[in-house]
Image 1 (tube, rainbow, N blue to C red):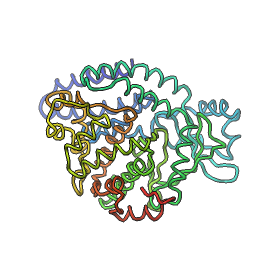
Image 2: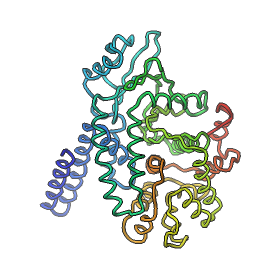
Image 3: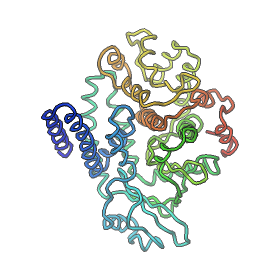
Image 4: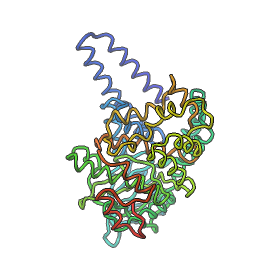
Length: 437
């Protein structure tokens, strides 16, 4: 009902713009975008859960949404409306049988971050160590279950448009992935795996977990001092390129070197640390890929690196992205689908809002030849959140206007060639067990 009322208010405001003419109409339409953006953000922030996650994903769609809308939605990454402290105490009593002040030497009432499933408070352990305490909103699991109950219906409607979609697989992946984010014990275990892999790393930092204080609804982890990653958008271009490469290597190196994929690429999950590293602080959406799937990813990338579009078509069919015997020439398929891999098709590429928008547009097109091709495309089992990182990462990189040798970096991972950048060499020198990202 709340989204319906929101749509009604937006339609009413838009209709009002027709009462003005010329410059006055332009100003009214600018006001419409801003007020609607504020309204949408407030509603999504209040509703939390899956609805708020949609807002976070939309905020990263650089070049698709108006800047005012994307800017407002970006606040959902870390500064959503917090829950009352009484509810925090309620969670602690249920989990520990004690209020926060009895569990920690000091616990700050006001959260320093609030997102879709929980909010984060600063605290101090009895031994003086500073920690970040993530507390899940009471009732958010039930709210998300109600949201997920409608996912099948919505995607079934999408399947009528894009008939190639295996709706059952997508629904299953979405539900499993979002439900997994509600289990803080699972998240803590994933986070500790990453912390072990990147201990002492040259440019990646992962906060360690305190398992003795972590439960299904509370995670206690090392507190890391740092600035919000969004501040990177205003840094000089050379520093933006460096930070973009760090994020890129963390995302794709994790997949190809460790079979691990952290699928929530947005600025609210990253911190700029004083020593120049990037801290990756959220592990609710982690997928582990078996070696055979990683090898199939490599098959697609290898064909693109060799510019062999016949091998590329065979590889995309083998992994399930393209259905066999699609009635199109390989050249037509490549012309439409190559945008998904556009950043690695040339030696060096600059991510722009236009590139990010085109990647999304091609993959969601429903009309013309592109729409016809998309009806033979699919999201294979286990890859819904991989699609999320491609779109989300493209939006993040576009905000940075990131320029770099993305093709060479991916070649390192797929072909095992020596690092092509200084950061790659630093990674090789500082990663444990000789498995650099």
